[in-house]
Structure formats: structure tokens, C-alpha cells
Image (tube, rainbow, N blue to C red; front, side, top):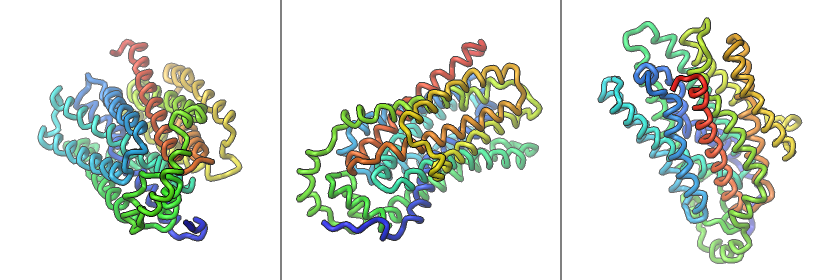
Length: 415
């Protein structure tokens, strides 16, 4: 089958923009929860909401992605991703309705309800992030870079909006709750927008149709529904190519061992990050001149520099490409843990802001370097499987980092 070169096809810029919005929409609800952590600390002061909600979120995300990664070749990518965005939208709406129904009161019942909804966010994260990463892994690197930049942008934008909302509503009656409702309403809008973009715009872009057709020729069965939505008949492609190509495809086990260093990179990147962010920044950084603004400023600085870090690899000269270099840089980040501990104990807020910014910058930069390098040299079905596998290790790292974050509480006798 004659497939035109992607350089001759239109839609790359629109595709990059859509990927950015899809990344933004897939984490905006969770990042909104992190940004409005002060609201939940006001409602549930004795329940460590920032740490507990993160701990609830991760097992659901990790369990779901492991199942989906194991069965990725059998799962229809289109249905999977649309189901994930629909789950996000309904869960965020339910969070709004729960707050309205309880009139913003605390209590264990309300807290359990919030935790249940956060579990749904975790499932949605695994469905969408794994599906999108696998789907974009066999397309141009700019798409997956843009998607991961969108993930970080959701944190940066929500942090910025949270600071503005705090300034606008701080002295008004019930101002904190008004800001929270505004955040969640914005989240619902973008999540619904993602449903429309993925269902009707993204699959019809010429460059996307090219990559998906190429993946189908190489034996991928996960793109059939998306090609059908774009008006491309896949039956003839499947009949002539699937049997031969599928038998040549590397197994998930083979992909795992060939990319063990990349997988460890991602795992260790997120262990280091989540052992500090966000729980430590809310509960263990002491009292400073910024007062109630301090934790919000730290979260905002992390998110902004995480976003910047995800665009730095676009500058080819400073992009880390060496597998050994990526591992050394990843391991070096663990030196930040004692730095945070001693800065929280003896340093001032300027040094803490610097450390948080560096944590975000290195997190974003190393993530994109690994995610764009790992899929190179494989066929479409293998790239899809590898993309799902890499997300498994991201979520494993997050889960481990969150568990380690509780050591800050134990060490300070706050549990």
C-alpha cells in the first residue's frame, strides 16, 4: 500500500495544538484538586487531604494501567480514550454536585465521597494517559512532546488561576469556596472539549490519518475505529498485513527488557518528585512571610518550571539523548531530597522557591527526553505497546513517591 511521506501532509500544527489541549484536559481536574488543596485543608484539617487524596488516586491509576498495558493490543484506542475523557467529565461534575449538596461542609462522609471521586480520576488518568501515549508514540515526536507539555500546562494554568482567585476572593464571604467552584467548572469545560476534539477533529487530520494507516499496515489493530471515523476502510489492510506483521511484532516482555533503562528513568524521576511534591510543600515547609500564600506559590513555581522543562528538549543542542546521560541525571535528582529537608529546617523561602523550581524543570525535561527517545526504531504496534508500558512505570514511580512522602509526616511526628 502506497503511503505518502508525512512531510507532505497537512495538519501538523493543528495536531500539535490538539495534542496540547488533550494533555491539558486530561490532568486539569487533578491539578485543580492540588491547587485548591488549601480549601480541603480548611474542610478536613485532621485528614492530611493533599497526601491522602494522592495516595487514593494512585492505586486506582496503577491497577488500571497495568491491566490495560497487558491487554493493549486488544483494546480499541478510540473507545478507550473517549471513555476516559467522559469519566473525567462526569467525575468532576459529581465533585461539584457533592460540594453543592453538602453546602461545602466537612465531615468524614463528605471526605469519603471526595476520595471515591478521586479514585475515578485515577482510573481516568490510566485510561487516557496510557492510551494517548501509546497512540502518539507511533506519530511524530512533536505530538507526544506537546501532549506531555499540556499535562504540565494544566498544573501551571490552574496554579496561576488559583493565585488570582485567592487574591480576588480572599476577603469576600465564602471566597475560598467560590474559587473552587470556578476551578471545577473550568475543568468540566476543558474535559468536554477534549471529548469533541478527539472524537471529531484529531482523527481527520491528514498527518494523523497517515500515521494510523502506517500503523495498520504494520499490524496494529487498535487504530481501526479511528481510521473508520476518518473515513478510511481498514478491512483490506488487515487481511493482507495483520497475520504476517503481527507474528513479527516484539512481545511486551521483549520491549520491557530492551527498554529497562528508560523504564527505570521514568520510575526514578517520579519517585524523587512525588516524595516531595505536593505533600511536603503543603505540610513541611514551615511558616514564612508569605503566610497562607506560601504553599500556593511553591506549587505554582513547580508547575511553571515543569512546563518550561517540557519545552526545553525542543532545543536540540541541549536535549539529553544519551541513555547513560539520562540515567546519571535521573539518579542525581535524589540529592534534592536532603536539600529540601535542610532548607525547610534552616533555609528561607527564597532557597525553597529555587529548589522547587529546579525540581519542576528537571522533572519536565527528563520526562520528555525519555518519552520521545524510547519509541524510536520500532513498528507502530510495538510503539503503542511501549507507550503504555512507559506510563506503567510513571505511575509506579508516582505511587512509590507518594508512599515515601508519608515519611516526612512520620519523621516530624505529625501522623
